[in-house]
Length: 367
Image (cartoon, rainbow, N blue to C red; front, side, top):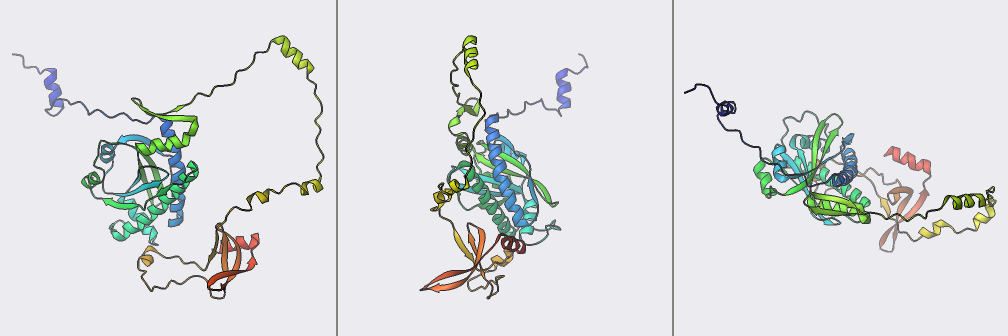
């Protein structure tokens, strides 16, 4: 009997005594490149608006990178992301179907919460993620998703209404499985790198059901294309636009036409200022457009801790003195100042000063 080892025995030894096993088959990405481009563009615009909102909340520069769009299963998401995670879930009530899920690392959520509570976001290594931090992150995510939904409503030219966000912490994969039990479900993930001015550089992931993805693509392409679902996955198919037939012209006819064309110096009518006065005013066309008219009594900036301590009977001090004029806004733009009057049993405002452009600029700089 030969003492030489067979190739099978050598392979078994190299593999730790186990026969080589085939890797599990990966599910194909169901999203075509056209579909990814559409979802990526929507995500880029909406999340850029969300990043601007977060920057205003944290008073820090916030940047996001170009999104990466993939079609994966929920199990693949769980396997690729370590817990714990802070997960924000919102449902679309109007304008879109399905729901939207945002995931962020707990360590990054603690930094965001610390900034939301008026601190500098440093020395938070030993901070725990308590209900207070959860409330702070919930408010930040609420503002971000609200801004993103507004951006989508503008893109889609339709109202997009969302339910209040649900924010929770996944301690482990078991808790994630309870919230997302169908691990084989195929979804669309849009991943961004989120950075906050030297404090964090992390990944934030947006998860959308395929039904929502198909509806977004259908809205974005409109009548120019259609979304198809088949064996090759979800793809956008552009409709062929039939070009008008061009009449063929013989060389002799074209020569005759070119010879018959006479070129003359163009003549323009003299402009007369008196005539322009009698032209219809375009301003008359928008006279009936409604505008929001609001009066600001005063403002105050509070931390989340201060807000949570409010109760019935609490008094909030505003930045306005009793003898200072009130600010009058039209569609969010400061235009005038005034004072409070009483008309019968209702409050009113008497305009005392229409602000010039320079006065409005000084007002904004003061704020």
